[in-house]
Length: 244
Image 1 (cartoon, rainbow, N blue to C red):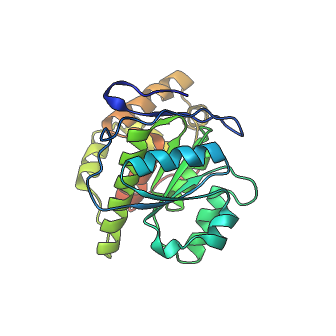
Image 2 (cartoon, rainbow, N blue to C red; image 1 turned 90 degrees about the vertical axis):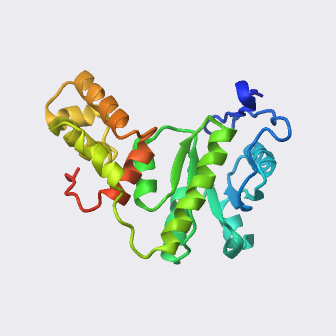
């Protein structure tokens, strides 16, 4: 098990596949419990991770129901009572992405946060473009997970409250600070293309594209690729983005 850093942050680590490492719960009161009660339905085929998520999220004042598979959730879970879904991406049988697609086709409007043990950019882009609220890679800190779950719930509530989703002027203003080359990199980056593929497409060197990529992330104040993809989808949908 791994303990967290200063401030009682909880380091939650999980390997890809069956193996996983856990975490020690932080002292009572170390996590913020402010705000309305959030009911999380977590689906992960790793029993250890389910127990860990249950302890961490309950410790933050959230209600948690855990399921070992998508089929188990669909068979026993009361989705009408859920506030947010926390789904592992790769699971035996129906994957997290498959479950997201099924719920979307059934018209079930719930914010979905994915967790994954593998840094698959294409997978993250697919999840975000299919409407996921967030995509978090393992290992992650408990405080970060809690923050992003709450943010996903708040953002979903805002969308439900308004029928139109105007572009965020701050995001558009940040985009205007990008150079023409950085905008080209941005347009390809949010499709899930790797830096090597972008370099081949634009005719630049891998190192140069990596520099442009870092500049795009910095100027857009995106902490990770899924956040950049969400900016592109929510605030820049009217822009003409190059096809892959």
